[in-house]
Image 1 (cartoon, rainbow, N blue to C red):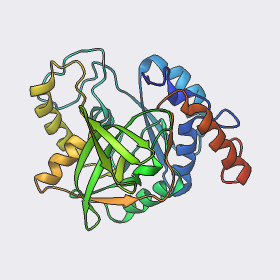
Image 2 (cartoon, rainbow, N blue to C red; image 1 turned 45 degrees about the vertical axis):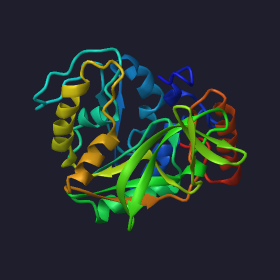
Image 3 (cartoon, rainbow, N blue to C red; image 1 turned 60 degrees about the vertical axis):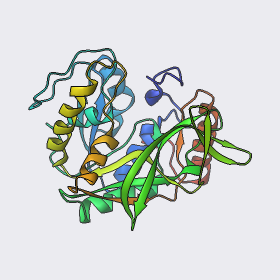
Image 4 (cartoon, rainbow, N blue to C red; image 1 turned 135 degrees about the vertical axis):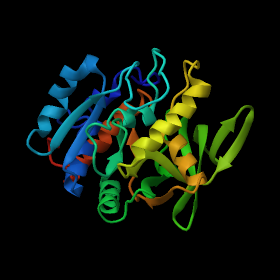
Length: 287
């Protein structure tokens, strides 16, 4: 549920034939070569989700549904997970998939449009390069990920020779007349327009699951009583890189990212999707 957007934006119809953003991502993933899709959802909207999303891809790919609830149990976790009203974040969402994911896999957000190039790059990486000590991610140029309607938060990547060294979470990023800036307290700091940022588009080996559990156990020991704390994917990635257990390749997409962070973004994204269809980039309907 997007608090700034004001609704369940993953199921909002934005394409010319009522397509959701995830319809475009599914189309691009299948076109790139993926043959299995795992949806992480809540049980409370399973029926609506299947009607609007999953049923359209019957016969086109293997489809699984797993549920991330406030009290989802993680098999093999040596720490009790407190029950609370807010989900535990993207790292936790991956953990609930362990029973159905037995192969290298990509991770995306359901409410982000990534473009075709990223799916091709990550599919090729997962089929030729990924290993237990070599993961990947698709990065985007910062200036291609901003909203005209308010601030955004982005993970700004520091790389060396094409591999990730560190992700710095920057909040309140906005483009102004004299450049792109992020705010830290009362201070404004500039960011380069071509800075590579993470949009949660990852390529992992299935051996990540034990690492996730170990990291989540440590996370809970200090954050379990914080009602707003979330276990984000970069937390585990950063730990593995700094401990020398992992190298993470950064694949940079040339595409423009689109999303609906704010309700005012909706009209712009609908216009973009209509133009895709008019140019023949996507058929109508997409799925």
